[in-house]
Length: 359
Ligand SMILES: Nc1nc2c(ncn2[C@@H]2O[C@H](COP(=O)(O)OP(=O)(O)OP(=O)(O)O)[C@@H](O)[C@H]2O)c(=O)[nH]1
Ligand SMILES: [Mg+2]
Image (cartoon, rainbow, N blue to C red):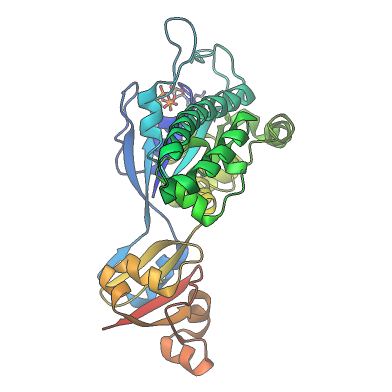
């Protein structure tokens, strides 16, 4: 899974990005290309399982985070989005708008004033225009083709693109349009920007903690079509904290009234907007967390571990993490009836511990 941090220049993307990884920082200011980091997803349940099984290896689930260069003012005093930028952003599975709320005279804003609502609207509008122009071209092409071809795909796609275009024309992001699984499949190759799962992360300065509630209300009333989670964070102090040991960081965070780190919020929100969950595999060799979509069957989950496990799937041994911790061992779980053998249609739950039986 890939998530992209996008926004205007100097909104705090790279500062946030650098808190994601404590070991290294690959990002550089002002580069044309996005920097990327593979971020380990912290999981207390995996830590606990590792403690119990004492395996040779512990493998966290990971997510790739892309830090995009910010949008800046061009020579005609306007902030512009290039096609190249849009195309690289398109490759992400989900987007995070990184929006500046902090005020600092020494750091100029590319639109010359700090106005988070305006900045969110700007990104939304640009992305919507990009989708609209794609849909318009596609529509024209499909209509021409429909006249001379009886192709099944064209027949199915034309009304869908018409529906999307009519929706986007009303200046509504495509994520607000109700689409079924088949329709989403037909659209998936086009990588429409306003159809992507979105979250908005707002970079507050440390003195503004008490303004957050008011700000959230303002977003709700001024941007009713946003329909994306809004998460406040504090790039600067979180970056300073990221160098500290865990215990010191906890007390530092408490001093500022920060309940959850930006990293944790961003990863949790990514899972939410992408509809993801985790399952575990355990053993003496390895304890591992895997990422799958919600509603994945046991067979699909097996396929994430290995394609052979999908093809040669027989059954899955399943215990939920909570049951395992409550009873202490697989044998105790068997006695209690919480250890089960499930077939390939079983819908995996977040926190299931699986062992795949295969040919
Ligand atoms: N005062 C203050 N400064 C901040 C805060 N967050 C970031 N900065 C500063 O703002 C400047 C720009 O931050 P970056 O993280 O590089 O911003 P960016 O969004 O990556 O910028 P571009 O990549 O150029 O678009 C840096 O000097 C940061 O130290 C903040 O919360 N408060
Ligand atoms: Mg940057």
